[in-house]
Length: 466
Ligand code: CO
Image 1 (spheres, rainbow, N blue to C red):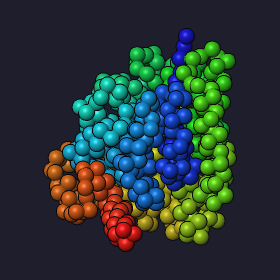
Image 2 (image 1 turned 180 degrees about the horizontal axis):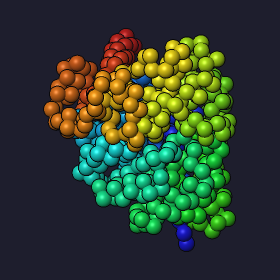
Image 3 (image 1 turned 180 degrees about the vertical axis):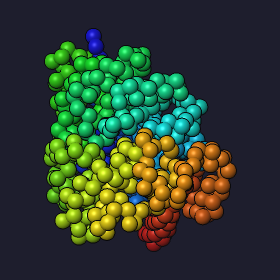
């Protein structure tokens, strides 16, 4: 019997796409034993924006969260999303940092590491892949991930070529990551058939978003074309900028006579559990109903859900929501000028912010963000198509050329660890604390100071009680 398995995304991508990753561990701790028995291929629960959000907003140690997930999900594969050489941040880290991060992630409980590069410059995934294979347990899966986008230079042949490259590098599965939800059913069919023909023995995963309303049709065509794993979210956290619903796809595939491995009662119990949690965040405004709707305009703007909600938040902060439509319209132009980068973090934010700046300033590229200047210098990798000559000239000067920054990345200086250890002093109690600081210095320092203060308060309190 044909089998298609499910990755449940409620704890990471649904959480990130619908409510800016503000779901605290305490909200879902109770349901983990049920999720553990639901029969998912994996539970995506870490990485992406969860790490930053834990430290910045939730006063949680992301590593402790991971250990708790591991303890309470003993029978499931725990999955994380990792931006290759950028780890979970927005810059390229040194190779020794990347390697240590992967080692700690596996040691603290991660099984599936989905590794991508925003530009599909897979040289940026190499160190993370090698570290994953080096520290692998029998449950570890190194998943090579392609950032899907449409542009004149992103053809089916190009994607097949990318898959061959990932396979040759040593990845064990391949994931197509359609972060904007713009993959159409027709494209899914052709793409997946093509990939299956070319690298048929590699398990293939499709990750998409319901943003444009395409996702269910796209998933069904993907299933018909031979996909092995699909990403879905429990139904009350599905739809809109999140994934299609787990239960809906389960019942559909049941009719197809396809085995899913899912336990019907368990997946329904998971949804029942999350319903009042969703209501709580709708009521307090943390979840914006706007993100739950269908927006077919994304088929024009190619804007992923997270980027859309970030833009809304930024423009609301600046009291400039009246510029929302103009900023959306500006995005395709910025993207073309930048050589058609896929709109995935951090490029989605960079392109989005530049589009907002162009609109607010009232003149295109009068101000160019530091990040985009670095991108044009070549610091993010090779762009899918060349950057517009005007932009190159403006940033690099007449005759300027982008540089290849991989050599700089590969340095194994150890310096990042020394700097972190010195900055933290006795605030750091583990390699994980040091690693958090390297990734997010300000947030980690604030978190560790708060942790220490809290412990001292508790200690005083205990003495008084005695
Ligand atoms: Co996603």
